Length: 112
Ligand code: FES
Image 1: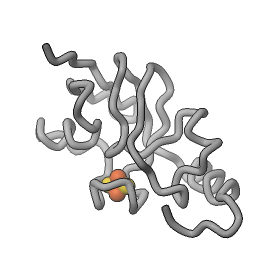
Image 2 (image 1 turned 120 degrees about the vertical axis):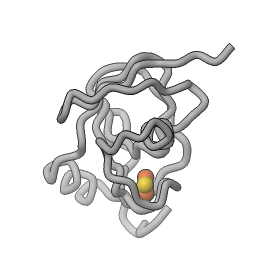
Image 3 (image 1 turned 30 degrees about the vertical axis):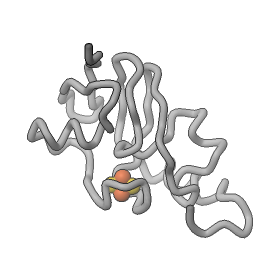
Image 4 (image 1 turned 90 degrees about the vertical axis):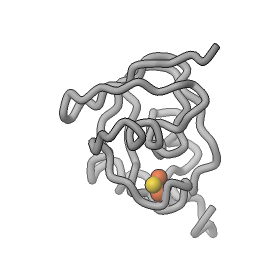
């Protein structure tokens, strides 16, 4: 049986359902929602960067250029690589989140 969770985008109040086996961004698109910016859909471009403010999730591979290892623990993640493990509340990454990710980028790493 597929387990689904409710995802709430705090910025606009939009909600949609996402199975544990599907990326959050992909589930959003499949249901015709447009709350999160869409780019490569593959964890590389950083367009779908969000901060999970509530709930449990796991992630697939993400570019450390956009999500340094320490930032993921704070909820920063790429929506195309987020797989919910409970209901989630997320908000779009603000400029401050993006700057913090840039500053924490590991030295000598400029990609995945
Ligand atoms: S859409 Fe490119 S990293 Fe998610």
